[in-house]
Length: 64
Image (cartoon, rainbow, N blue to C red; front, side, top):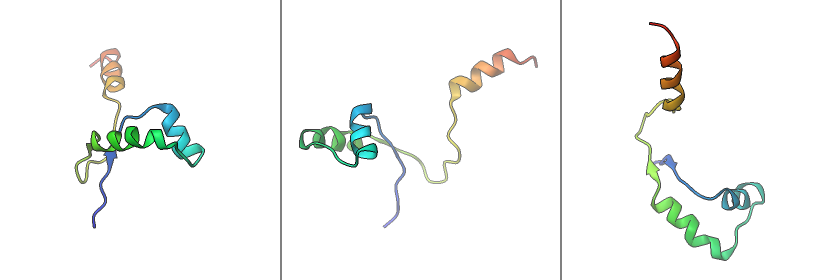
């Protein structure tokens, strides 16, 4: 089965519970599952991800 890279949005508290503390509460399961269900799959071979806002800001400051 192929891997899927996914961008999800979740609260910092839930993230810390899962990643830092290694656990989550039963009441958080729905929020975590919903975050995965509502996630955005990245296209295969997407390359590096960039912060476009920063790139646009630097382009404005640099003379052409």
